[in-house]
Length: 160
Image (tube, rainbow, N blue to C red; front, side, top):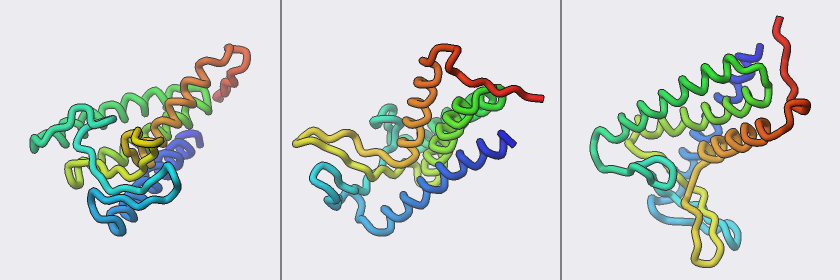
């Protein structure tokens, strides 16, 4: 049952991200933006690297190398989640896995990840990101919060 729930969380993160990216790609021209709120735009941009454009390259091999690294991370996190006796930890890892898998799909599909959320204050812009990135950040935050709790407050599941 817990494996099914992890799969559903990962699949939901992947699906919501993929649908949102297709909506942006179908409605906003590349490298343009639409103002939504005073400090928030929807943009249509792509990232050939990892977080914040790290390791960005125009090499034809780059998407495959970054995808391979992403898949290795997904496998590692999946093993960790499968062995975990913490529901919070498994849910957090499932969010990270779903987000990472969605970004891997983008890289394999067109060599880059579509980013579209642009938050800013004045001239300072946070780098554009997508919902897969948000799922990854939320998963990491949940892991950090869960591990920062004293052991007496962490609920462990007992398996039969």
